[in-house]
Amino acid sequence: MEPDLVHVTSPRIILHLDMDSFYASVEMRGRPELRGKPVVIGADPKQGKGRGVVATCSYEARAFGIRSAMPISQAFVLCPHAVFLPPDFPRYVKASSDVMAILKAPGLPFEQVSIDEAFLDVSSLGTFSAAADLAVRIRDTIFMDLGLTCSIGIAPTKVVAKIASDVHKPNGLTMVEPDTLVSFLAPMPVRKIPGIGKKSESELFEMGIRTIRDLAAFDIQALITRFGRSAIALQEIAAGIDRSEVKEREGVKSVSRETTFEEDTDDEQLITATMDALSEEVCRNLSDESLHCRTVTVKVRYQGFVTRTKALTLPHYTGDPTAVRRCARSLLRDIFDGRKIRLLGIRLSSFDPCDARQMTLEV
Ligand code: DCP
Ligand code: MG
Image (cartoon, rainbow, N blue to C red; front, side, top):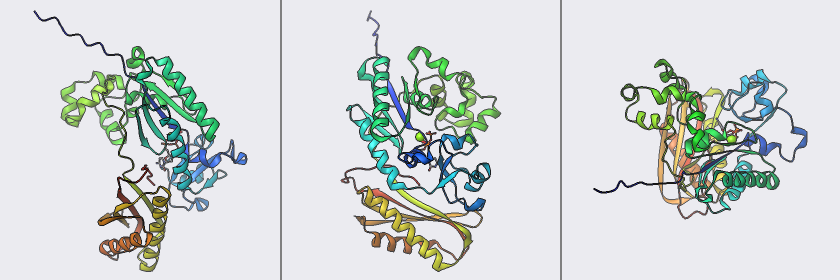
């Protein structure tokens, strides 16, 4: 009889790093007068009448209940004396690439997932304690060289490393070794699983599933009936199983800018001028990144939130603001039907693969 084949594989060791209150921290460094203050990055609050949202805020501002994506008017009500600053995207892109350079330096498999977070596969270091040493070195280097803090999670899988990096924010280091993986996950609310948003969370609640433990133990057939085949991967994640690997991404998919009008408008001159300004800004982002694009997408949200988009792919890569502006104007003409507009946006994508560096900048 054939002997059983026994595969002994050592556990993977994955590191996930996420910068703390990223845009706010970049604004606050080198400005000691802001230290310790509630700082909010986002739209102009206009004494509570502003219409945009909060991009992020310092931890001091979070103590007042302010959060990312909250209407800026609400943030103003929660903390009118906060320091409100407009976003300065080129600065954040530069800071991001400085952080990513530090992460890439050890030459380990690296995957950037957003402007301020990335994974490293540190399995080759052999032990969790060696991984923790590297994490401390990375954290110190980022702090000493860039004046920014970050939080790091170390775990046997990507999902758990990502959940772990959030546990002791800011400036935290959280390690989940294989023997504590299940007990680490079990009591967490299902919402902690990346990809479970408000909607899935409430669907799970309706089924009586609140914690990751509940999800891991739930009848798989009932889960499949509700969520389809993706339920299998979801339940595996709840059980601590996640085979996804750390892999270099293609880089950025798109660069975009959008703006909400103070008042819904059908004034064609204002609409065109605004689109021109957005084109110019997004082209500046493109050139800051030395990128060239082929696809221009214009977005129009009408009163009542009906949203239309239209894209055009050019025959050649371009970074020329005039070409982008012309293209955006023509797309706008195609989708503007005379109704009042609430929001305008532009997105540049299909970047030239030959461009030196590509990275995510979602606005
Ligand atoms: N961001 C944004 N709008 C959102 C969420 C985030 O513009 N709705 C921007 C601003 C953040 C940056 O992306 O600084 C990184 O997002 P994070 O979710 O990592 O949030 P922070 O880094 O600001 O805070 P944390 O310390 O919680 O990671
Ligand atoms: Mg962050």
